[in-house]
Length: 96
Image (tube, rainbow, N blue to C red; front, side):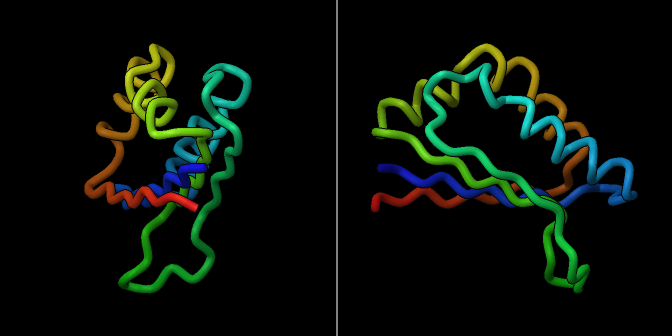
């Protein structure tokens, strides 16, 4: 199992923008067949070091993670919005 965690810092983290990002991430449910687990949430601490939205996904294999990266819905719908609204995006992928 591969876990893929992504943190998003929005350029303008209004409540509406944060909700829009979270909802777009959650909209992948049922559209990206490689996803075995999908959750997204908004930061509640709002400290200086906090990111605004977190995404946690799980895949059966590295091949499935790579297929997800180029999946038409992820690459064509989700990624462009994240790039438009975010000033920073960081990720970690691990096996386990």
